[in-house]
Length: 295
Image 1 (cartoon, helix red, strand yellow):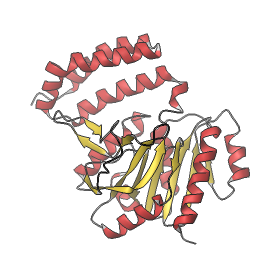
Image 2: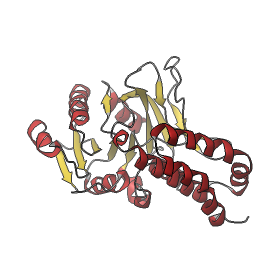
Image 3: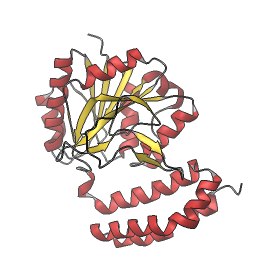
């Protein structure tokens, strides 16, 4: 049967997360009556993820990369092999709620003018609390997660949104042929922010599908590498500022937001014990200023 959705999952040394995620995926797809193609990109796992996947989920296509290439590169390799008209990007640390695939297929059919579909991500440990419902631009230009940390009720109705979180979203393959998927130079983190901005620049629109729900553990893989995560977040935020902020937004950030934002990052680095990243965080505005246009 021709798949309606190609599902891409990137994993690294996380069979304990991937196993329940795949069970929820296949159960939901079956109950929804939506044929799916599952592509799992293994970023050089040191556990038995590849063997366990082949044994427990033989219909899944595993793409072994042999090393940790980062989130962007891994997703791009799978997207090149995807065959369905809709491509779902889903983190390995989520559980997919019943109705997810049926909801996004209905939305894609009902809204042909939209190319990206954000879904509702709830916190796995606190399912009454929202992880995010898409991405929206703040007044100073940064894309933020919609409703993050708020109560699930009242529900936000399905509506147009600026962009979608890469943790659980659906994209038309036709858009990827036009603008590509993720910028591989980013490695991991903020690649979905960059994609949302590029999609908007190409006049592609995003629809939030509130009936499509996943439960998200949150940083389950990266928690094993806190210093690396902090370094990637800090570096890529600097890249996003240089690439997407308007001149007045950037000037505001430098003049007013710098102390608060960098101070919060330094405190976060202290919490993770990542002192070197705190120092880098305090300096990372300099290349941003140097690389930003004067007008």
